[in-house]
Image (cartoon, rainbow, N blue to C red):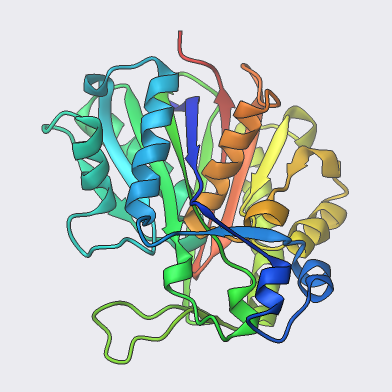
Length: 316
C-alpha cells in the first residue's frame, strides 16, 4: 500500500505574544517556575479577530502556494482541532471555501487532541486510497486560549494557539503509521453543548506518566514497521507538550538529542497544531531537506497517541 510523502508546509501564529512575565502579573507564578518545569518561555494567543479557523486558512494557503499545486489538485482536506470556533461549518469546510478547493472532494475535522495531526494523516491516506487522487491537505489548528481558565496557573501557563498545514502526496515511499486510544479523563476540556462547560483541566502527573510511555512505544512501532533505526532518521518531531517529557524519552532511548526538534519555548503546547507548526519551522529554516526521513510522534487528550515515519520530498 502506498504511503504519504510530505511536499510542502505552511504555518500561522496569532498576533498576541504572551511571556512568562506577562503571566506572572495574572497568576501566582514566575518565569523561573514555568521554565524549569515546562521549558516554555512565550506562547501566542488569539486576538479578538482571530480563531482556530482563521489561523487554519492562513497556514493552508501558505502550504498550497509552496506546493506549486492548484486547488483542483487537492483531493481531500482534513483539519485536526479540538477548539473549532463553530460546531458547523467545520474548520476544514471553511478552509475549502477560502482556498476554492473543489466541491466534489471531502473536507472534515477530526478531534484527537494532541495526536490529531497524525490521525488526520491516517484519514487522508485512507480517503486518497478509497476515493482516488494524489494530494491531501492536512491541517492542525488550535485556539486553546479560548478554553483555558486564566486563573488556573497549572494550565494557563502551558497552552498556546497556532496552526500548521502540510500537503502530502500518495506515493511509493517509506511510510508507517500507528494510532491508538485509551479512554480517560485525566486531560479534559468541556464542550459547548455540555451544561456548565469546564475549561481545560488535567492531572499533570498522570499525563506525564502516559506521555513517557507513549512516545517511545510509538517510535519503536514505526521504526520496526519500516525496518529502520534512529540512525536512519534526520528528525524526530514530537508533540511539544513539555521539554521534560522529550528529555526523559531521549535519555531512555539513548538517542541524539539534536535529532529531537523542540520549539515549546516559543509556542507552548498548541495541541494538534504543535507537530505541523514544528514541521513548518524546520522547512522554513532550511533544516528540513529533500530526501530526509523523519518521524512524528503525538500523545495527548483522549487519551490518544500516534506515530508516523515519512519522507520529505519537494513537489516538482
